[in-house]
Length: 154
Image 1 (cartoon, helix red, strand yellow):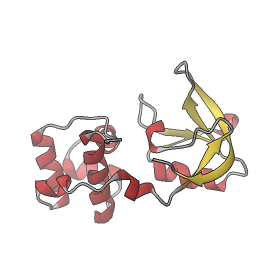
Image 2 (image 1 turned 90 degrees about the horizontal axis):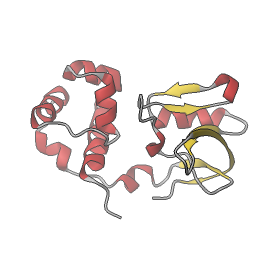
Image 3 (image 1 turned 90 degrees about the vertical axis):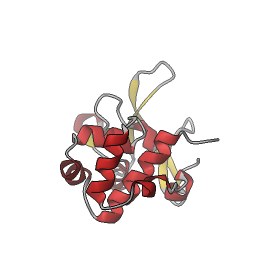
């Protein structure tokens, strides 16, 4: 399955940002763009202009070409263990809310929002039974509970 260019680009931006040691918020400030837009870029949900790409490269101190040295997403997540629900679905990077880009995890009465997949996954690991929100077949978001942990399948 071929991963769309926007998603591969976003993963590469995120990889370079993490390597720089900058948080998403600090990087967005440094690049003079909104954090929400930065989140959308990293999740492959935005289609940045050439000017925006140049600004991202300048903020990271890299050549624009560095964004196109594509690292396959499977290599980024192949060793990551995630919770799986009874129906075989799992917690994965594509579950960010389309509204605000956050991941909603935790008990219904104490639900938390995290700005990144990694932060949400770290919190899920602390729970006795991991619980997260995801859309059902009708597109309605509901809470699911884990029955097991396993590697993220691509």
